[in-house]
Image (cartoon, rainbow over all chains, first blue to last red; front, side, top):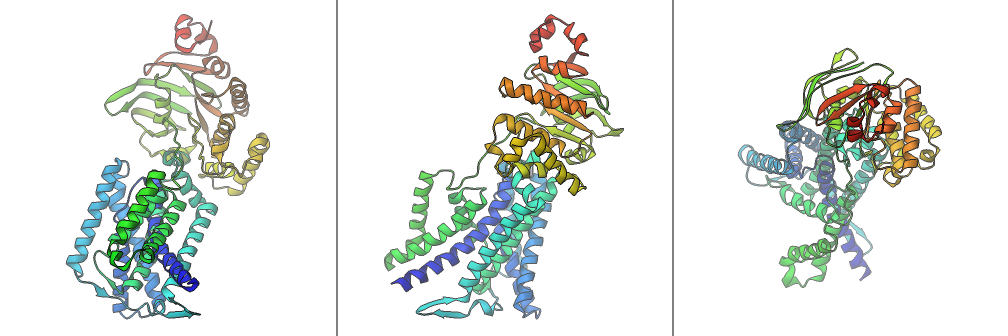
Length: 299
Length: 235
């Protein structure tokens, strides 16, 4: 019984880690720009496609593929900020949201037209597929790497936000962006950094999603981003700890429902998960760790 | 140092400041006085470049009316805004640290943070505490110190006494007096005309977006009834 609980806990951590990574990417951009970046899924897909390309052009070394995927996702995120989101930076939230959906659809269709509508196998990440046996518990190396990589990414992000000048400026910008500009800090620099970090997190997420699925397709990131969006909402949108909490909570709920529900109800797992989330939101409509809102009234 | 010429400020199509002119000499303290809605904060915002405006703003022999807010700050304009606007999720130390964003001389800036802690021991006591947990008066001190961390050529103070208890207001004005004595150029926007007139070398009275009077303290006080109705200052 204990083995079973440990096994499922590891599953929950692994799923939660994936959601937390993606949710953090959404939250860091939202906290500064007030933008729900639904094109984040396509940044993940770019990471996936870059893995495919690098594997095809003979970079069989997984380290090169990992670095390449992260690099491609970071560049894509910065590129999208520059060409799509910067022009609508000071528009209202609806314009930003529609822009994000538009960018997401355009990129998905470009993947369909220019690459393939079918999933393409990416199987170079062999070290994420090793079975590991700890006593009677069977886990895959993916679960360990995913959880550890997420925890490391969170730790490094916290250090960056607490210790570096730009990190402190980003925390300040999440509360009062205009005041940060009035300190002489360039808005473009803060926002581009936020997008670069979200791209980096998307790149890491892409590696684990590909390792789990073994293939890349145009909608690779779409569903994970929807789940991460839910994680952000339940954790408190704009709150970075909230995004992490929401991600792990969602992972735990999904695995928990698979364990609790009878097999015949397995297909309704998501309905039960969202019912629990609805109850949480009735209790905390702003999310569990909703960020403090405080702004000056003028300028 | 700062020459504002034919300045108008717009919110959409609505003109809230109408073709005003004023000058601030280096080392002086100039006050902008007037009732709510007179256009005082809008004027300050136009100097900072955060609102749409027309006319020219010349700062240290450079026309700044077309350049970005961040560039204006780098030229040496600093603001302690209305409502204080401390970064409440950052510690007191981090607020001061971020105030020195444009400084290249990091070591000197770090020493200045320590100097501010000597000026305001309460901020030192609470340096690791979130700025949002400070009292209104402490937040105002922090806001002014944060603005000065940028080593500005001119300090814009927007309603520094707003919402503060009389005792704290007195301390804030004492601080401004000390800054003035140090030779820091100050543009003081205030509704508390009594205190502002005592401090300022020269004052402009705004009403409905127009300058209706200007002069030193004695000249302003001579305006009598008009001043009483606009600013509450008794002759």
